[in-house]
Length: 353
Image 1: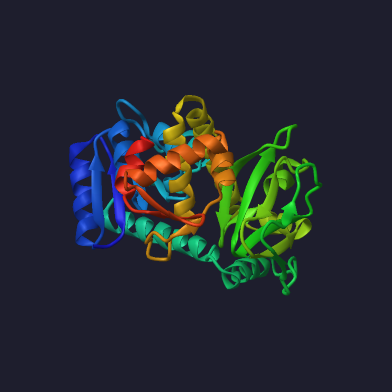
Image 2 (image 1 turned 90 degrees about the horizontal axis):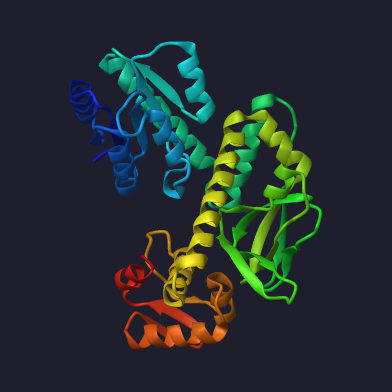
């Protein structure tokens, strides 16, 4: 099947006709008759594009759009409003919320397919900018540079090699760069007065780090260190801001990344407050395992120190050891000299739900 399109529309005729036109054009469609059903379908099916009516029962289109921006898997998904309204205020409100385009009822098949194809193509171009390698980063930057016709970014990207346990930046440092991880993995963490670490996230090749304090005009509120030998590309702060100012879509991409960070942090705090130690250890193992998946999504063995699991889950190393022993005896994981291999991912995931 082709790209997946979710249609959220309370008018049965419009819903049926829109789905039929898209299916004839080779798209795979999912439908919902109100915003709440549509949101559930979006979480389940992860569409490549969402077509959504504005005026609907239960949850309107504006509510759906706001909700999708708090779901990490849907960040950046093109969102097109379907509306019978043509007043400028409605269009302006949608644009302010982050809508990508509009279809005004009544619309014909040509208009529908044109907008869908254009938004999918534009989204693919943006994803291509963020290919998980240095070549993708440089193409992304050079493209932004040529849009203004001025040399806002240097062609020679400085690469910094950092060994395992080397610091990238420390809490309290003044930010000078945005870092793009070319290879390896980096953990971002905070430390309390007694020196105990709490890991906020683990980043891998293709991720950016260090842009938040630049956008907030503050010092680094966290520290970052390599958990294995790594390479990072350094983007000076002035070049980073030139990049943002030159292209609105690039700026929106970083804003959505920030929104994703806030959503994940909020969810993590709730888990720390209410989940059992067993659930939190399972969550930490699954979280790190996803960072070590190969390009086909297959699980790989990975090394995760007991101290890092403790920092991720917010429980003592002794409690971590007890839970790892339980998981091993239950046949959920296999351990060997610090290396962990998940044997039963489905059952392990059930522990954290």
